[in-house]
Length: 522
Image: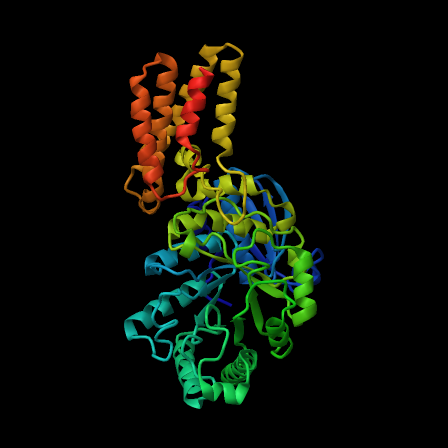
């Protein structure tokens, strides 16, 4: 247990509210440790009892107490506190995120900020695997310099404070010679450096490398890649367990997506220990859906439950012009029965990543009652602040374009449909009133996005295009009012500017075609 754990102090830090009397009762019993829904013993279950300003938490350990305090702090923030008894336990055993994208790695402060927020939303796992961290991939043989190691230790200590498992990952696959003992010695030497700062969870990533062995010596010893990978994983796992029996290992295979019954993944899974977790992204690299039936097939062919590396909200590589801040959807409500958990791969935009990550946290905690829109709106309130949330949603409404294939810009189209209906019925006064109301919200949103805030700076590429779209819409309705043909020329210039901007916004409709339709309509 963490001897520094003080429920009152923790709760004050989480909520800023010291008006409640908090009582923690630890209990070692089935009532507290067993979840009937998941048929799983867990140290994260708790019973939260609220009576006025008195709060009683029954749990098995400090981790459960911390989760309960996070829960109650969020209830207070959302004005959702009511007397009663709440029995809570997570759907998924493993709930987390990974800094595993291509692009600029997060700053140290961003890493701490995201970890703190995700802990408050009851995630329990973080993977450190930035693709462009030199000491993760390119310089995998070299130990971290002291200053970098000190930062990692601070992250490890933060994770302990938040009762999160911190996985440090290494990706040697681009250059390792599997048959060379000196290479394995370098891997273990690097691992021991990380072990020395308190890391007890490791990741061995063999993704995004050539499918064929690069060295003739390896071909002579192993024949094919999967044999080399099985040997490396087993040898590494045995060495880790020799170092400390409590150590956990996750591997990412070279084939990490598909049906789950392919030769490589089937052979790999059946020939490594069942306690080694295996990353899997689903049927695609960026999967629209993760289904229970696909998970069952994976289990049948690999003898492992998949640990999903969910490539959302990541927007690297070909997706770099998209901004992914919509909620997670398309994950089966009962997927927790057939998988270890889900690890969400983030964007290089740490502040923006927080919004979809919170929706992941909500789904992972209670997948069967997950409401994507309710979760998303709550996430925006947490990240943006209650006073600006409604304005920000006007902008965020345009970012449903992703592998999830959700309907985009629904709020805008609903508003325009209402305006069009009023026009068609002959009630122009109502139509212009509705338009002015929506444009007023757009204007308020625009003012917020101009502020010098971290999330606004991250969104600059997209907000600049949004500002042009705002100008276009205002000109359109000015034209409807005045029939001033000079505005058409202005609109065409704005349309040209809009179309030249690479950022993806809404469905990027053909503005010129829409202008022609508008002229015909009026």
